[in-house]
Length: 125
Image (cartoon, rainbow, N blue to C red; front, side):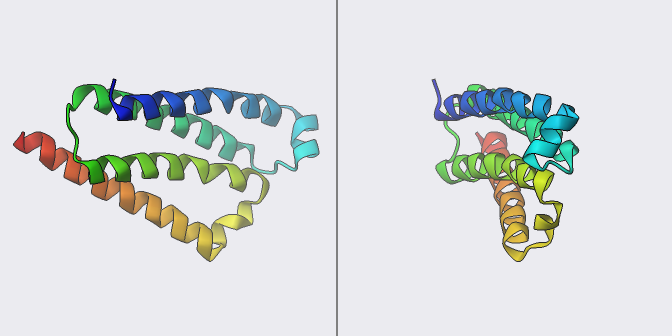
């Protein structure tokens, strides 16, 4: 089994577990207790973890020998992007912080570069 498939399954498991955060965020009492002011951010992170995990499983099953740097970039971006939604559920203003913006942009750069390199690899294989 490929490393991408394994990591994708772990990400799917994380996404499933964040379903419990969805339950928490769906109840007024839970939102008040945990200071959740933007519950839609939990939904975004939850869905993003599930989608990214599914994509990693699919590409891990479809591409026999992906370039290492592309795979590392895709995996890193696939975790960074969804996880950045969760802090925004409690602290929406965190999205304005320089470190948040840096991480957000880094995740997109990693995903963009990783997928372009992987696509070139697949097209020339």
